[in-house]
Length: 114
Length: 113
Image (cartoon, rainbow over all chains, first blue to last red; front, side, top):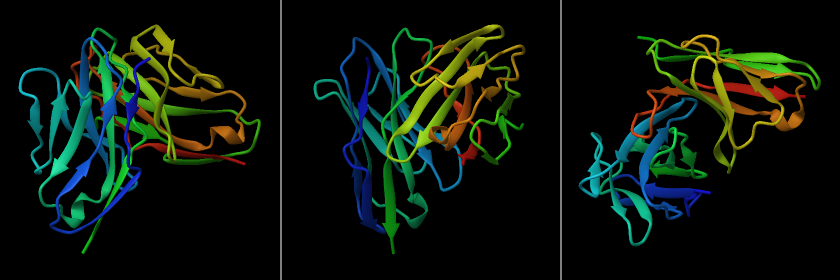
């Protein structure tokens, strides 16, 4: 069965520092990869996704993630974080050809300190 | 445009009680699903539906029932609540297929005492 591993449960960083949130998935013939963000006491929102094409995908608020097939990774990065980026981030995968069931990692809590 | 609406937002149940968590979407999405979120566990799929009249089990279906009589609504029923069902429940909807963005409700925080 497909699985997603987020290696860090919590990542504390200072404001304006770079950050990387790691995500690895179990290999499959074809997968679609997603990062969702959950702000405190809210539902999940799609941050960015990789479906095909360019392996580097970007969000509108400065995050980016790179699909690396050989390393089965989809790490999320931001060169300079803001206090408002404090949230929990979930990596998720869908098997190509499936009905669309998202399989989530356990989440990484990003805490940005002033 | 309301998106995905879940009610109630908070609920406390006694062990053995039953209740229904409501989920409604106004985007005409065929695919709907229920997840539970527990600390350190991420989100786990309970049940899902690919259209009216069609439901299927996810990763953790025990203790939960669902039905899908309309495209808009996908209620989740707890027939006899147990403390292990204390969790935050999220409903999501999307167009069918792997490429569509899933839209999530705000969640229902359920405590079973």
